[in-house]
Amino acid sequence: MKRKEVNSTRMPVYRDSGFELYNAESTKKAFAGETEHEREPEQYIYSRYRNPTVVSAEEIIMEKEGSDWALLTQSGMSAIDVALSVFQRGSKTGPWLFFSEIYGGTISYIEWVLKNRRGLDIHYFNPDGEAYNLGELEKRIVALKPELIFIETVSNPMLIVADVTEVIRLAKKYGSSVIVDNTFTTSILYKPLQEGADIVIHSATKYLSGHGNITAGVICGNDKGIMKAAIEYRKFTGHMLSPDDAYRLQTHLQTFELRFNQQCRNGSDLALLLEQSPVISKVLYPGLKNHSTHCNAVKLFGSRGFGAMITFDFAGKNDEQKRKRRDNFIEFVSGQIKLVPTLGDPHSILMPVEAVWGYKYHEPGMIRLSVGFEDIGNLKSTISKALNAIESEG
Image (cartoon, rainbow, N blue to C red; front, side, top):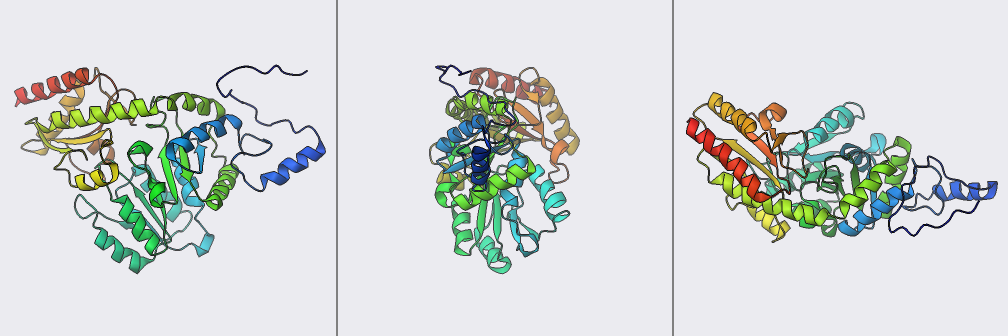
């Protein structure tokens, strides 16, 4: 029975696990073509290999990223696994250098998978206080000769902005490949591929989706050799996003620019508000002129914005008072700002830094705030009332 063509403006959800190949000859042709690992195959075979709904979502991200290809995975961590694994060459893999101020899940993956299970030669580059010293980085690269360098544009949770453009230049000068986790920044503020990065990754769970109801990751690039290796690895390990999540991601991407730009504006307004409070000792936000890496942020982002993440620390005469003020703030704002272990949601959410990153950051009064795109007046009112209440308590 011939199916009627439907005049829909949207890519449908193809939930097929396998696709019809009709006869032996077309089957042979399809499997022969699969060895080429093209981004969009001439014939779809199996949804773990490629799926048309997923490919359609990838093409939207390619346009936004300005990349030649994009590959979706089922989480940000699976995107990191794909991105890093394509550069592994077994026992022939040389040393890798990771900037130390990166997502805790990535650190755990490095320690438990790359080092303990795969035996890779892993090294870290630490900041000099609250910024990276690129002169020291060049010395480290010369001495170590890393095959791969991994960096986040804006670190989590201390919001250090690295001069990624210069990092990429140094890496290429000495023959290192570069992977950039650009989740906090997104392609709206900065596009590392334009500066020569080999791979850019995002936890699409965050701003690309932006609604807190999908987990997804994406890796983007321009090199077709890397793309083919990534397609092959994703296929064999099963790191494929479901067609249903890909369909929903497409609908979310239609409002990506509107959402993220508003979140950046809200973030800037709230950072200024927090900075003025006498019960706050420090506000970390790249848009503030006193931020340790504000110059890097201006260089990379221009006038496009400074992101929607704020980390701030309560003042206090001792740790007990700082911790009490932190806990009171969380309780005061809980009607509007929830404690949720993620970021990039429509509504502002927060995380107590010590409770999550206490092994690394021991500041008892510190909170990481993910700013949403809700009404800024309501946000300011909620936070101001909480800060005033804390101040009145002494």
